[in-house]
Amino acid sequence: MTYYLDGNNICYWKDEDTFSLAPLLNLCLEIKNKGDNFICFFDANAIHLPKTNTEKAIIKNLLKDKTKFRLSPGGTSADDFIVMSADNANGSIISNDWYRNLIGSYPWLDKNASPKRLFKGNVYPENDGDLLLIPDLKINRFVETNLQKLVDEIKNQNETHPELVKKNLIEDPLYGEEKVSNNQINNNYTFAFWFDKGKNETKKVNYKEAIDCFTEALKLNPHSADAYYERGFLFYLSSVGFDRSQNLNEAIRDFKNAIELTTHDYALLYDSYALIGDSYEHLNKYDTAIPFFSKAIEFNQKINSNDRMLAYNSRGKCYMKLKDYHKAINDFTESIKFGYNDIDIYFVRAFCLYKAEFYLQAIDDFSKDLQLHQQSIKSYYYRGKALSCLGKKAKSIEDYNKAIKVYPKFSRDYNFRGLVYYELKQYDKAIVDYTEAIDLWPKYAEAYYNRGIVYNELKDYDKANADFTKAEEFKDDFFDQ
Image (cartoon, rainbow, N blue to C red; front, side, top):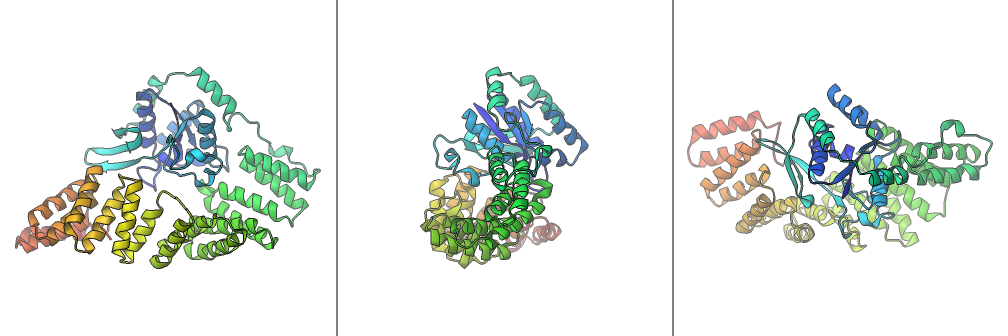
């Protein structure tokens, strides 16, 4: 089996704000240890992301082996290369991305597809170090932090597969296609030539060259809504790395021009409004995004397509980010009504129902999510909280037990099970859970505070005051909401 790795994505598994090669290299070695093969794709900005000179040197060295590590061209995302390559070779992908914009072209990406070919994982902190987990592949290993040691071990275990290398070099969209260079751009051609060439370069995933082609087309016909839309979509697809904000704003500008230049192409209007909303959502401008999703829904009703369920879902997530839970619930309900099957749809609606204090309905949706994902820690956790709010303490404890069984190193579950034990006046059990939570996360302010409350009830004031002091010390590091 060959696994296609989303390099940038995996390098953020440990910390979403910090690029680290450790999770990726550990995964590469684990795949080799299992006798399988891998090919890793990086976004074009990857060589600039490491924080240390050591990691920068390592990633540049890795990229010398193009049979294993590959860099996407500037201005593009690795996503298209990963999916196309996996599709060509009938391989599988490891990434926490859902590639939703590509499911239409590659149905095997759908979460319900069989056999499963998209696998997800994460890195979790433990007392003895970080743990790399990919449950569906039975990968469970502590993260080795000596990067050079990992590189050496990967090289030592690297077995050559001539037939696979040949297939990848011939069929791979990154290395098997000749790209148009800037000096080939020539103004002596017609609008139709540049527009068609732009579409062709887009199919080859040569986004920068395609953008240049549509720019040339617009010089010849500055009133083409289609050309603005196509270029805007390319800017949207290219919104990665350091140019993310700039490319999204360029996309918004082009989509707005497309809207201005068309009146009756409802499909183009729907797509443009929806993608403007998506762009603003990616820029964390949720208030600004919502009216554009609303316009997308309006135009989609005119073309009578169930695509508007995507706009309902996206608008619902914006409302959720803004804590307008009632409106979010309405939008998620519309998404479900129109058949939207996003992996998290029942969880996000359940979360909003919980926040809006509709506990019975929330429990029902968390249960539906658990029918789809039997090891969903977050659904067990929040269903346990909802049950506790309804006074169903025993049922609540059962859910925390299940969450802890799925992943026993999650400190939050112990803390909240401890709260239930406290409410049941089972103080000894509450202290055991709070202590376990603190052992797993020594800066867990909420657990210190809660344990202090129990000690106070037991009139052990010295221990209570010591815990309250710790809670105050760590209140800015970790405090459950």
